[in-house]
Length: 370
Ligand code: G6P
Image (cartoon, rainbow, N blue to C red; front, side, top):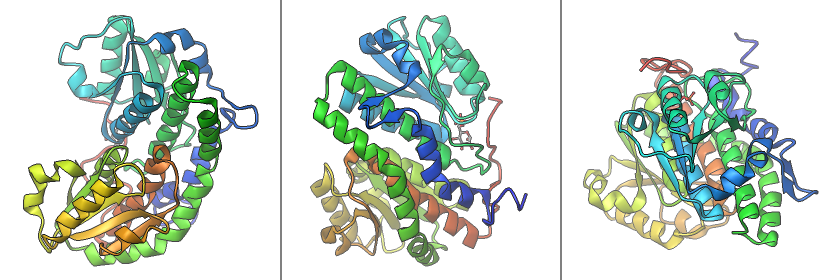
């Protein structure tokens, strides 16, 4: 096992560090920048279906559900196809309306999650075209689907998903950009610039790990003993907040909630005092001014803000307790970069609290029973 950990203390840390490679592997052979194309057989073979789809329904659980939410923002924003994201466990039992004009996408690292598999079977029975985004080759979900795109993250051992999540985001981003091109909802120039930018993401992830790892450890030391955490984000970064909070709960056993930043005033703001750390994903993209005012609201209640900010953005830096910098990228790609320091934060706090990081209590890597 020590050999498999490749010199890292835990599989989770190894897997966090593997992300530049796992994202690159997931894009290899698909993102062909010089030819100006995204090659994805699963989409291309069924392009009529995708281009005429009335809507896309994404079903998944846990971290994969968070990837699905970001997929919703990406596909709706870029390709203008309506998307709904459902917990598989809710979808399967609520007599959902599905027709043969729907595309149902299941996202699952293991490809074996019982609820996702059952929901997918239901969708298939009702005539939907079913598509899989799985990491494990030849898994049950991969075999059941009509078509799909694998993530090539390699085996993920840590119970808390990290590299599978960012690989799922890479696939969803490619699907959204590809559909946008074929639907004509983005210009050729925008398509080309997104391709070039996406290609640079693995290097930027590498840079984020390098630049933030030591800093995040110091931040973890400051907050290791708190009992509650709040995570806030808007737009593309709302699901990032949910995922950041989930990572922390899973492995440190600290209660953490993720919230859309604007919803803070409808509840969580009541919790904020000097003992409440609030992680705010605050890159300099859309909604920037609004997120700045959310931070000011937290400050005026003496909350401690840890912000994920864009490099060289001093405005947020000056009003928060700690600022973690990520490179400037288009908002579509921020979730991949912003997730990395949040994974590290959860990891460091968990290690400091003495939790079995790779196998936290009560959790399973793959939930194959209801
Ligand atoms: C479990 C794992 C999570 C994972 C979820 C969905 O809860 O601990 O890490 O996100 O299942 O698993 P899947 O394999 O379907 O992505």
